[in-house]
Length: 387
Image (tube, rainbow, N blue to C red; front, top):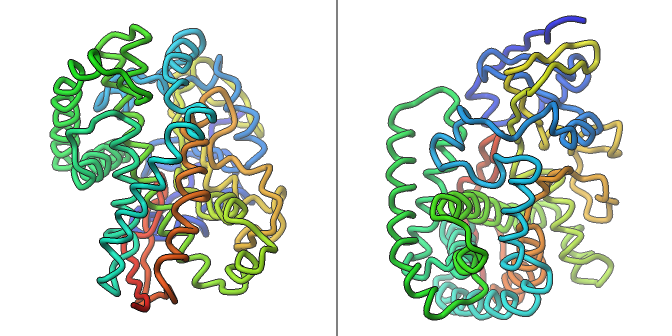
């Protein structure tokens, strides 16, 4: 048995495009310590799929982890019975039935209103002007923080995402994150009396109905915001970019030979918006001859696993006809994304057809730029359309 071999990265290069390094890691050292991230990376899909379920070794309970320290201990940072209890309490807000009966209609209304405002402009940034709003307004409704604007929803989400990925310890990033979490707490406090008198399907309301304490409620709403704003925003803009740069794929959808759901599944495999999930070793474990010791920080690299050539043929190619059943874009174990059904509905069932139906001749109007490895998506994406 041996310690994990070291693999060095250039953090800026890795942020701009992590895939060459991830491919090298999968091929040469699938369990490797990266000093620049102070973590051991697991990069092969089948390894991630297996170990994510072994919570007795790979623990989500990380008292000193960035997410716990900055946002509180939400259900994603709990294992076993505590995790199951909070997941059960939040399920009524995100269940497929609730998505179908309560959220889909609201998503459609919000999307059409937004596109009516946007269409006369003739041009915009798909990521910053359009996807940000569509994602933010949906999340305002689902969280129950109706006193918050979609602009503020995006701001606080980005602040927390930056904080949770702040492995370099930038103090300005941490200060912004604390400001964002305090802002969310104020909106929760403002909305709780209203939810007591008029409960609904929102996450705030169902947690209150389930009897969770204030600390649990706050932490889980911050979790929903950190994962429910940036990722849908990035996927909305990203799918548009992928289809516009692969017009033959878009034609398959227009011809009825493929679906928006297929485009969603393939994009989230190909450009996984959540590229990594951290774990802490609860006890020693051996993988590929490497010993992971108690207390070691481990990153499960979803974005790498979804481009594993041992599982996916030509994994770097965007192909919406691909079988994506092996994708781990939403996780693989007990922490499988609670908002997966809502995300699929918002993006594939509502937003994507609405964009291409209501923005005639939608096209790129400049170069799109992508960034991130823990969370990845377009940072800018100019588009235009006909009147």
